[in-house]
Length: 605
Ligand code: ADP
Image (cartoon, rainbow, N blue to C red):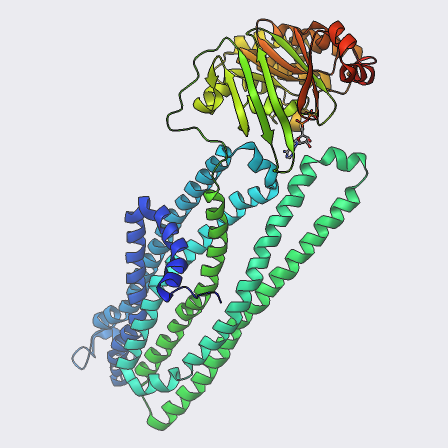
């Protein structure tokens, strides 16, 4: 039988996320305290209003009753018999005065808490984004981009909104209710008791429907994340969707999610909106009791007005308080989502003692390296390879042979399960990731261009590059001429993922970017799809230029790359099965011969 955790532990577990949230508010505690103080003042003033109405009303009623001729008011004829007009105005002004003071404190309360919570939102989002950026590649393979977007955008927003409302209401409203009740009781306890006797019944709908709102609210949040997944995947995969003519299919999927979302929101509304009319109905019964009381006992009009105002003013704070459990639940669901994400540690981290990699010559050694993505299958096994500085290596092998995995290991996207990988004698695990990657340039098959200008896309290779250096890199990559032919030259926006440019042009921009980075090691994943021969020639020439004087490890799909390389590494099922030059391998390696027949024989040179 499972043992129940002790009560104190349950309490601690319940409050832990709140305490963690409070932690985010610490830097803004002064403003937060000011907000709360204003809330206390606004709440207290709110409770005092009936008292003011009574205090102001009684002498006014008395004076009004004594006044035989209202025209005497302005002649000052009544001044000796009761309060004068100045005094009457003074008393009457007390009411707007208290209301204005309450308004000012309420405003300062809401404003200060919004000030704090919006900063908490900003900090949380930035921290979350930074945390996501620190994650290793495997994390992004595991998680859906849409869900992550929903965490950063929606969960933080829900937390912030709930936080504003909760911290705005949780102090102000109980004080308003308490002072309100105390004042009502002080004015006429029998009347107040008769009217408020039904008040506790209001708690029932709050509890019952609050629970339903919480459940529906959770489903609403879940579906919101699902919706952003559909959106993200649709926009990212728009090419595939269009080419398969699956627009209607995607639209149906979105419509379904939208429909679920609509039903969830309706469930929330159905339960949350019923609370108010129920409370109002109960209050109306209270009014009946109040009238009966007035009929039986008879109270002065000023007193009656004060008591009615007091009861009326209780309504809003009670309504707000009834929302708090729901808000807290909403806030917690979202905050937990955020905290869970923040607790995931990156699988690849810099050690505390890691040093920056000094400028390298580019000597790479795989020393008996093995690596598993999943426990069942090794992606690469017992890889031993020595690559001298400035050497050009061509990796060849069937799809799934482990070529990309070797490049990922070199970039330290993953750590080897066994063996060691060094660059200029430094084990990759002993150097910082940034310093390693700053010395490795990559050009991959899928060129990723940002929705920005051509200039900025090239400059991404080295952010401090000057305009002249960007242009030089573009010239070296044979991109300058086609860039100038664009409508705005270097300032042309390339469109989402570079869709305004041809495949060959995109590749040359990626090469220019790598040229600008000027890293001593170059990892190349050649495009499998053939470009037209003119583009192909240009890309090849640009790549040749980029490769000069660097250590190059290329996943080769072109015969020319294979022929020009110093060493071809033949991979099969995660192992290196042969190494050597083209002719040697053709003669000696069965695997190479079949790869050559399949891939290179007809491939562009
Ligand atoms: P190649 O680049 O030669 O086509 P890869 O290095 O991409 O081969 O893949 C080697 C093996 O690792 C394949 O069996 C592939 O299915 C597996 N693999 C690649 N990437 C992942 C991943 N992210 N998660 C799990 N398995 C993977």
